[in-house]
Length: 363
Image (tube, rainbow, N blue to C red; front, side, top):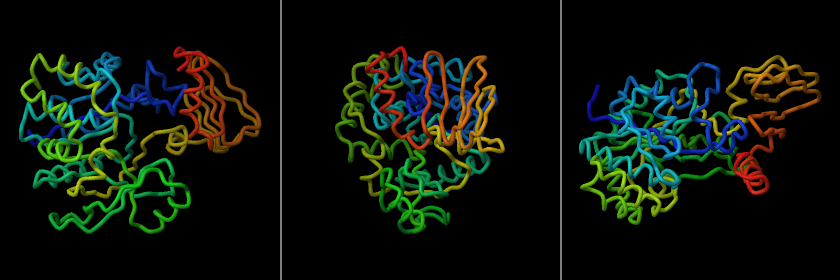
């Protein structure tokens, strides 16, 4: 096992598109979605363990979730849990983690993973990560994993492949030609039919040196903030420095800040049964269904003339439903959601409306 390989797990999201199951106090990455006894965060840590051991795995999370991370991943040392004092999207998160790891090991290469994805074929995932590490370790390269699309999905970003990577013998490695955020259905169908576009997985590999160089070139404001702590990372003063610096960082994704601008971005195309589990529809699509196409999550259910729906009701309730087609029925604590599946893209706005009208206790 290469001792210079590290993993960063991004674990700060609130998962509002899974409300009311996912709540501010207990977001989706800390939930056991499939009744396996392991949460999404734990499944993420489990699947990378054979490639990067826990002692070289870093979790970046919001400060309010530090105790949850420590509880669910007891194998992690406390110094491997980096606590953001404010929410600032993925770019500042990745910049800080790269600095932290570079201070530990200047030769480090890093795989950066979201904490809340589903991957069915984990052996193929690990092989892709190993091959990705080998590629980025050979030069100044930023690598993203592109998922072979199976439908014209409008909830994902898309990556257009360019020429094959001449620097590699891997036929699944390409220069990136363009990024497109969440196209409409017509454009998504064109992308799918062209064979040139792949879903943006949000999983990345690079050397710590390479991503920090990219920040200095393409996101100088963010780079300047975090470069100011070069002598502080991996010391007792790091927390205080981050508390003062992190809230000042621009709130922007790594795609917008770096990946769409850089000229050394590559994509490895992969197929390993991936879903970002970003919505109720994604959970429905990846879950077993009964003969009427209904999905039941931890619920006692009696239905009549219901089809294509997902039921996730907590506690000891018995759910009786009649005449529902393609609906979400979900409750958790003091909140109940009844919503057509095809309106789930409006869920974030619904959650904002609940917060505005009834207060934070309900979100």
